[in-house]
Image 1 (tube, protein in one colour):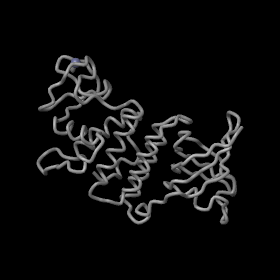
Image 2 (spheres, rainbow, N blue to C red; image 1 turned 90 degrees about the horizontal axis):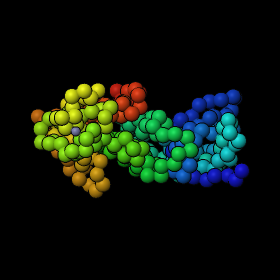
Image 3 (spheres, rainbow, N blue to C red; image 1 turned 90 degrees about the vertical axis):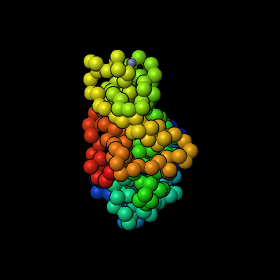
Length: 249
Ligand SMILES: [Zn+2]
């Protein structure tokens, strides 16, 4: 089989045998892959920093027959994110990005847009003022790209327009806002304010408006957005994200 080359984020590394690693890579072109990096733990590793967790590397994989791991033959570092080494909050946010890439995607299911979104997010996690919003934008990019984006304007059950000027019923299992006729009988319904829905809309949109979102002290604010997006994410994953308690919002 021919070798495959791609850019990849290293999302997990586990020691195996005396000198090797099994790495999980989220690659741009091949999606998530697990590969054996022979000699990856040696002092003079042939990969020379190309297997650092949360770094972007240019990798070459030798695919193996089914049932066994691909073999990593090259991993050259392309981009390292310095803020993740000096800022614990940034590092936790980086681990969260890795957790979502690992747990939400399937092996060999490429999502280049998600790779690009992860790389941009990791690059800017050192900016404390915008960090929480960047993480939310990444979560929303995951939901959109993987087909789990909740409905924010039209009823997730019947498709009719929902009045979002005040509090709105939000069906976690149904997939978004619910109109008053559809709400009864739906499981896992939360109440979300119109302001929170608007903030989610802005955070999920392209452009720069998300930077300008103002969260006044008396409004439910960023915490409510975190709560709602976190609840959707937990529902999609089937459990609470492990890093969620460390995100600090
Ligand atoms: Zn409805």
